[in-house]
Length: 55
Picture 1 (cartoon, one colour):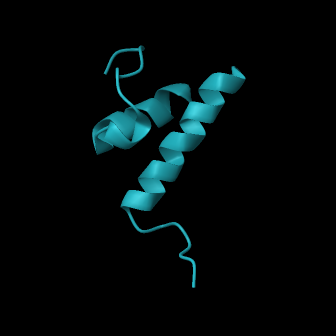
Picture 2: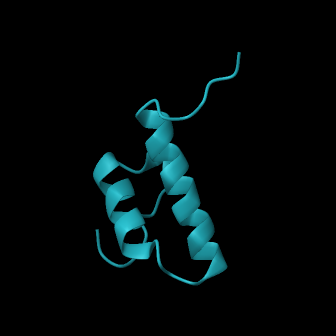
Picture 3: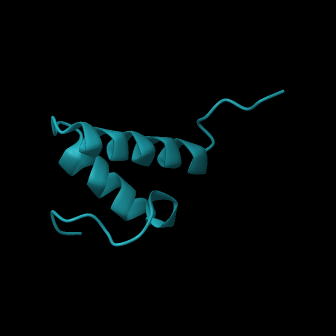
């Protein structure tokens, strides 16, 4: 993955693309970039069963 975002939505990112996006962009001050990084974290957590489940 280059410095550009993959041309797909966050749920379509591979695990490697998610990890790379988080590492490369987590400290970016741009609010839009931070929103995408937050979505990447959420997708990573969902895939790995780390999000709370509703009862």
